[in-house]
Length: 141
Figure 1: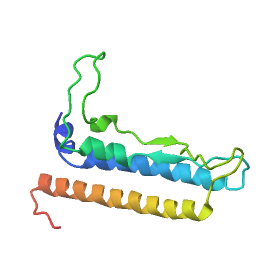
Figure 2: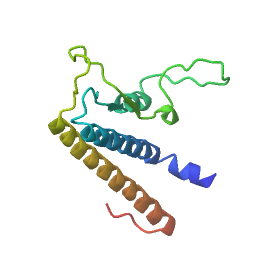
Figure 3: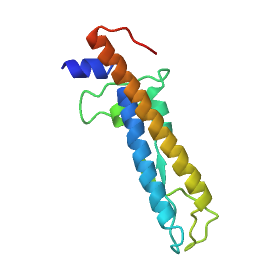
């Protein structure tokens, strides 16, 4: 399909995954902030950047799965990279203690908002360039 040929050759799939991760991270952080005074609440974090880095690492081999029973070999395909929420392990935390630091969560929320805004602007730039190319106009950077 033409749209696959156009969009898969851009950074849009990466931007899409980054925006998904930022949305999940904002929701998780908001939940952490909402539970700052809840006894026994354990904060939640989001894993994404390390998986994305591994998927984009060209120095690692990437195997092709031709059968569902085959194991994945090498780096992940970008479609396999999904942000996931998890409880970070903290051996120093006694049971029943809330480990949410409101200042840290607010800083992470601001950072997440900046990341999301940057991804939107980057995606807009890609669409602007594609639109200019389709219309036969010169691209202004």
